[in-house]
Length: 262
Image (cartoon, rainbow, N blue to C red; front, side):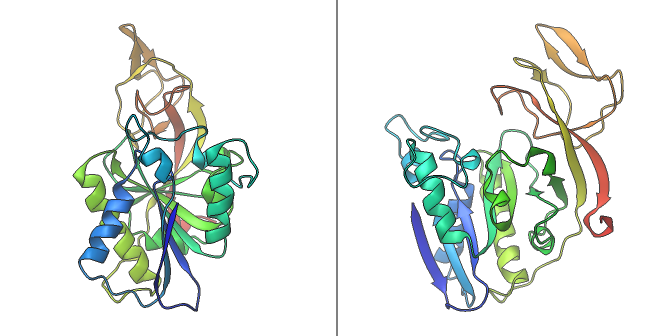
């Protein structure tokens, strides 16, 4: 793991966490591009490149070596797996920070935030994105944002330049909104979708569109050329054929704008 301390110490620290998954390198590329262009940071910012061993695995970048790092928190410094030990080390470095956790996905090219409602919702607004996903019903699985005051952002399709560009925009907006750099920014008021359940359809081909309503009886996937239809209305979120081994993705309900939620 690499941790760079940028800007001036003091005040509320901010952590930009990248590469929890070794194949999701858009955040690292975006932050390095911003620094190469002379980004002037005045706040207390930590730039974290987390799972370097997975990034540099002998057979090429891997999502993880032993365990999914974003299901391994709070970790164990004496754990048997690389990711369990790394989770404990990383959490010790960022526990006191406002955290932006940068990812990419196989499900959708648009940037969107993942948040827990008990965390500071200003951090969601500070990302500048127009879509946010309430993941309270996924809590307890060991994600970083369960243990820090933070927000995750899926910045686009994994391995694309668009994901890097989106990550750069999100990081810059986040730092500006929190006063760590002097730059224009926007406080977003994203449309919020709350995950309600999984889509348990293994070896299925997704034929819908994320964040677009699927009506009861409507086909949204297929398996072996047989249509899979919705038993009740839902919005697919983080849904793709190749995103997960054990499921197709998630069902969600639309809740309204972030500013209107309790």
